[in-house]
Image (cartoon, rainbow, N blue to C red; front, side, top):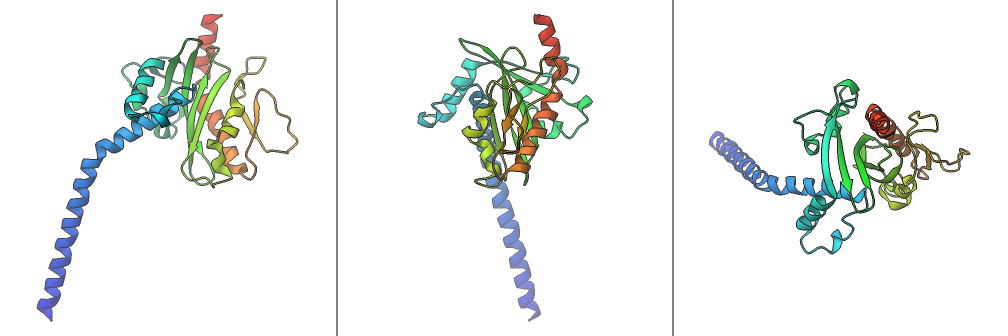
Length: 243
């Protein structure tokens, strides 16, 4: 009986080691493909915020198509601090906003991507916050007045389908087009997400939230205020230079 138990223990231990080794090897092999998928997803969202890469679903080679659109329309990227000063030798694409948002605002690296087409120049800001069940995140593309929103792309990790998850649908995202971050006195007011039917009139600084998704909408509201608020000094400096 003792020998039998010893055999079972040795066999089980060997199987655990073998399975762990196989899983580790598979993870190592797949990691470059996973990293590429993450890279392409980020590039696609940045492009979609300025209404590019719209034919990706029909592309024969999705990676090549996204890279071509990226090279064509994303003309620059850089990182600033909360004072609006350029931070040298930091790759904007490598900055993880999730990690930066855990730091005091004075210590954050703030990435900016610059898009350009035949009609306009766009400044694309990654945003990150908390919804009801997990993170909400996305990109906000500003026109070259550093005030007017050209487009947004939002996503989430676990919001409720049909409710909070609707933040990633065009019906919600399209409301932000043309909204403004600063009021007539030049004060940063961000964009408020208000409760539908709550009696608060919409204006150039407010959009309707999602029915039944109030907490997620509040998360988007806080995400925009907190993340974009860190860029205010940079926006003001750029506007002053152009005036």
